[in-house]
Amino acid sequence: MADESSHVIRGINWRETFPFTQIFRAFRVAIHPTKLILALVALVALYAGGRLLDALWPVPHRAIPTEVRGGDRGALGAPSEVEMYERFRSGTKYADFDELRNARRTALEEHYAQTLESMKIQTSHTEALQMAHAGRGLGEVRGKIVEERDKRLADAGKVRDEAHKSAKTPEDKQKISDKYNQEARATEREAAQLYQVESAISGDGPFLQFFSYEVSQVNNVVWAVLSNDWLGGFGGAPASRERPGVFAAISNFFVTGPWWLIRYHTVFFVLFAILFSIVWAIFGGAIARIAAVHVARDEKIALSAALRFSTGKFPSFIFAPIIPLLIVLVLGFVVFLGALVGNIPFIGPILVGLLFFLALTAGFVMTLVLLGTGGGFNLMYPTIAVEGSDSFDAISRSFSYVYARPWRMLFYTIVAVLYGALCYLFVRFFVGIMLILTHHFVGAGMFTNVDGGRLPLDLWNTMWPAPETHGFIYDVDWMAMSVGQKLGALLVGLWVYITVGILGAFTISFYFSANTIIYFLMRREVDATELDDVYLEQSEEDFGDTAPIAPIAPLEGAPAAASGNGGPATPPAGTTTTTTTTPPAT
Image (cartoon, rainbow, N blue to C red; front, side, top):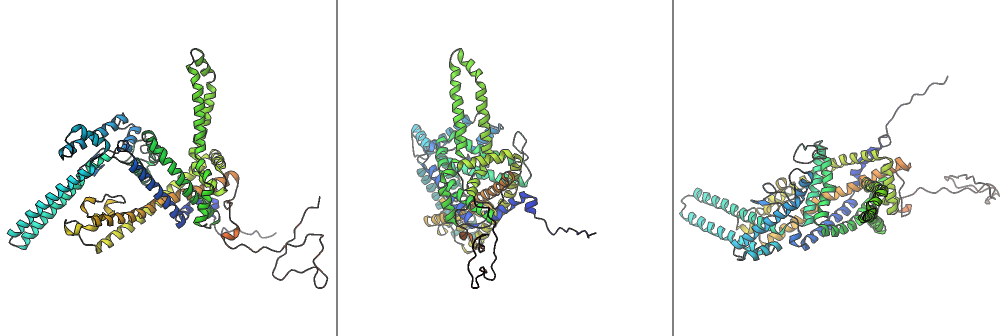
């Protein structure tokens, strides 16, 4: 009897045993420099385009800003317009959002008109209200505030100089100087706060308020995941703290913010949606393409090749998410036209009731399309990037994968959100430490004051407030600095925001990387296609060395090649011959 051989487990292939662990590759894939560069360029293009639209937008049609009281934005004042809309949707505070919104705008204009009159910029109340409605005269208001500030500082300086003459000891002079410094700082701070209050008449650009709100929801998702708060503020569930839970923050990100922009700033939304679609198709498609090759073959393609692919597939990337929405709109329009029959006296309601099943059928199809679009949207770009196909294939595959394995798709998405939150927090911590160290070491070498010592304010902390206390977003006191110092602060802020933009670029890169991995997993589950199967435009030589091709042996029955002794040819030493069996000729 043969000895039974024992089986010893030498190791476990975790990625094959637990496929969802493939998602943990997303961080390594996302931090690839080429993807980060593309994501950063996309983010800068979207931000620059949005701010340009904000600058061109008329003041009366801008968003209502956070009410400012004492210069403390948001802490003592009412929330911004989109935050008001969020509370209105949740039903916790506001019963009539439109009425509240109009009341806030009217109050801003009335306050600004009174300021114009008190500063003698405009004596007529009617003219002052017209200037307030258009947001005019802010430059003159600023000039008056600066003039009053400088006058108070000059008077305080004269009092200090006179007191120094009568001081008997150096300690007395130091006390006098300290008192002047405190008064000067208070005067400078009061002037900056007063201008901040008055500048609220210009409103917030719709993009700036929308962008800030969406970023805050991303942060809310991260902190809610870390706090294990999933349902706080969602579906009527009580919030455990001031921040919403995971699902509430995701709902705010995808529903509250966009729907506020659609409903109250429709034209702006259309223009920005066009810009977003173009930027997202070009740069997002390129990132998805690099991620597809990276995940499948663990190889990187050049940035130019990725952009060439995304521009070549530009119509597919553009129309993949739009076509399902067009289908819903067309079906809805058909139902609308059919409902017009109900206006015919007597026979109309009868026809509507008789054919109502057709409307229900259309509603059923529209619901399927919307649910498929919402669940499969994240798979559309990876489909085109992996398969090299068109928008119709992207829609077909994303819908089929979602409806074939909905719970698996949900599980993969939850794993990606959890892992992405941890990765985002790590990158945020890294960027924060980097900024804090840079701020302190540069500040150690800059010990001059603002405007050449005119005011007792540290120049470096005025140009760039400390990130450990002000965070990534900060308000610079532009009124306190001279022209050269303002230019320096502007350049410093540019580099700081580019550095902070790396955090946003990582978020975009992680989004495409994680969803590309999820697409590979769903495709293998539904279509039984291996993970390394990816569409390639270039030849194999473009990706590295290939294995040598073995020589092909002659077919059976064919005359052998002549050799020196008349026998069959012998292959060179070191080569391998392959015997190929062919079917008989027909």
